[in-house]
Amino acid sequence: MRAHRSDAHAGELVQGVVGDRGSAGGHGEMAGARIDLAGVADADADRMIADVFDQFAVALKVGGLSPESLIGDTPDQEEPS
Image 1 (tube, rainbow, N blue to C red):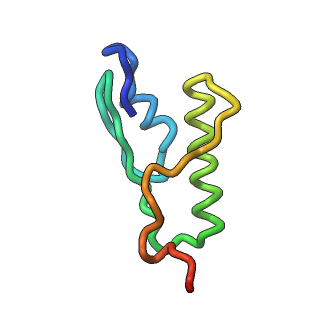
Image 2: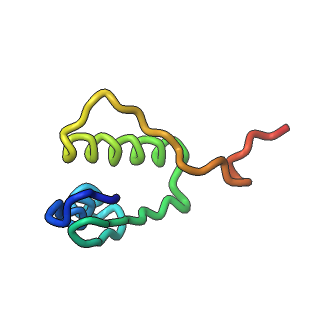
């Protein structure tokens, strides 16, 4: 996450959203997180991703948004031909 203001507390916001699902940290303007989904069933991973997205939307006071992938499918996610 990146913010335009140094007093945005991005690290605290991301840590609050991720909670014990993974690791998170940052500073005023920048933050990041990692949630390990290895071994998690696809349906459970999809629910977790949606939950994290919804919690970010609430924390940022935005609504009406849908998640969008920033990367393409990885080889293990490609549909069989």
